[in-house]
Image 1 (tube, one colour):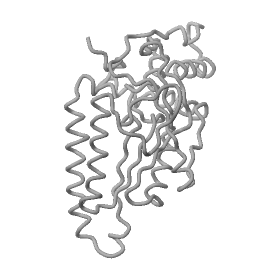
Image 2 (image 1 turned 90 degrees about the horizontal axis):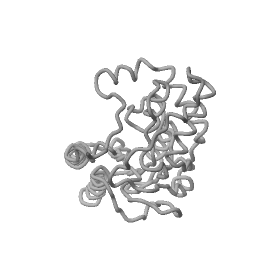
Image 3 (image 1 turned 30 degrees about the vertical axis):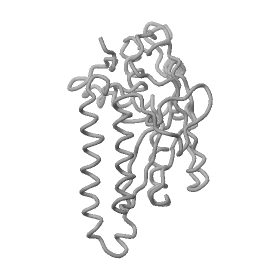
Image 4 (image 1 turned 60 degrees about the vertical axis):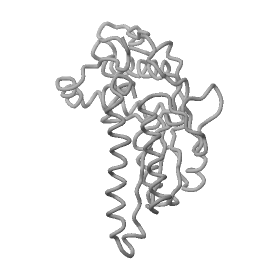
Length: 266
């Protein structure tokens, strides 16, 4: 999370202190429940693959991978995961934890890579890519993530963790180039050039993990879940959503955020 580099305290307050407050209040509520309501109650904690740190060119994170967070954001999320497990072991709160890979899709805030590139491209701006664009992420379409969460909530075993991923590993540069290719086809640039010509490489951000990849064997075998969208189908839907919902992101630009690349310490 790029914003945590420049403002870590907000993430510590939200992800660590905030989670502890939620756990305390939820535990009070859970204790006063009776019968069927108590039996069905679950506290579902949604976390990230970033808590595991980074991978080399091979291997994947599984539910037993040791935590090794790199950034203030991932460290705060790792802390929140540990708090949730502690409330389960100490107080008997019925918890479930999911760790997911990079989400994308409609309504994603424009600072994130995919909406940033889509919006910058059609606005005629530079398409900034960190470093050489070689960092690899496993991309998960948001509706697939929602389906997985629903399955975990309804069928998951209390106290267990489930990894959720899209089986869609791409380098950041591949993601940007794929977006450019689709835009070249469905919304050609007014100047007749490919959107790829707008790509620029900027200084890498601190603590930028090389690769994330999720082993989703557990959720597939135990809950029969797998992602429905490939990267090509998911990114196509996402691009069209941002093209058809210009009013939504223009309002954000006016009030909060104007497409700057975050997390660069000067």
